[in-house]
Amino acid sequence: MAPLSVSIIVVSRDSAADLPLSLASAAAQRGVAVEIVVVDNASSDASREVARGFAPAARLISLPDNAGFAAAMNGGIAQTSGRYVLALNPDCRLAPDFAATLARRLDGRPDVGSASGRVLRADGPDLAATPRLDSTGIVFTASGRHFDRGSEEAADGCYLVEEEVAGVTAAAGFYRREALESAKISTGYFDSDFFLYREDADLAWRLSRLGWKCLYVPNAVAWHRRRNLPERRRGMPAAANLHSVKNRFLLRINNQSRDEFFRTLVPTLARDLVVLGACLTVERSSLPAFSWLWKNRRRLWAKRREIQKKVAERGVRLRTADFGLRTP
Image 1 (tube, helix red, strand yellow):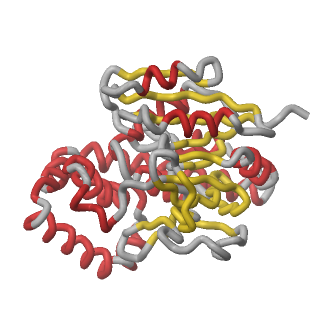
Image 2 (image 1 turned 60 degrees about the vertical axis):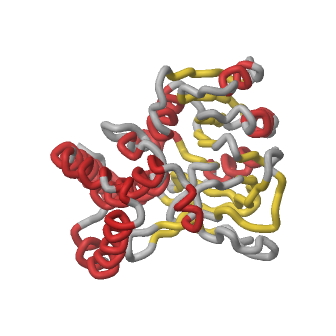
Image 3 (image 1 turned 120 degrees about the vertical axis):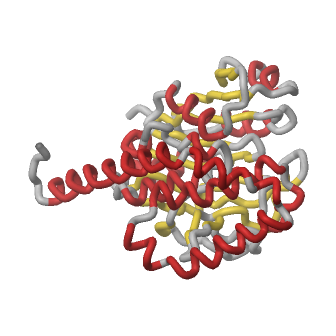
């Protein structure tokens, strides 16, 4: 039997210091047929040279401008052919059986569109393992927020049971290509309007609405040195915080149903007022997020209708499949 095929895509942006470790761990994956693509977002350091050094194991796609994580990842997905897709951050390294463990689980679960491994926090330039967790899958709250489950918690003895979760962090996100194709919209598999941050939560929500499940598999282990944490917000670049504010609203515009809107209105509105207050006082550099949303409102609403139509059509196909019927 031929090994399962996995496309590993790494998006780099001035990531020369981290790429050797992430690409070495990608090339060392065993038990699966791997293709590796590095999509470079116009780095100003030696990222492209580092990626070329891994040829022929890794292929480089060099972009002339910084297209953002989402668009760059979309370009990589479009240029690969594996049955499964692994989105891998440059500051994340994989255990040698990471891809094979997840591929085998999804191969036996055709209803599962994505999977999260047990991602532990890494530290330092060598991505050294720490005793803390980074992510065991994404969880959503009633106020429209999303978090990496287990983040910063002690890893010992925790989250050792395989179970369904809401979504997977794109630091080491594992996806069934069929699921990605079903979720693809005019702005890509990952919505390129997000540019960076929260695009993985958006894709997770869209996949869920399309009927795909997400599985947490603790035997698949990776290590991630995370930069973006809520407590570090004031130290983040202004552009990153602006996209974070913009994208919290894009998430709901894209995915929230009418019932969800009314059911979560009070906690969501309370959180939105906090965000707006912060932008008016301590984080004024993020105020352009609101003008961007307003200027693009017609296009964003059209995209929402596109997503809703896709969800409705897939719902019909799933229902008819349940009864053994043929779709028109």
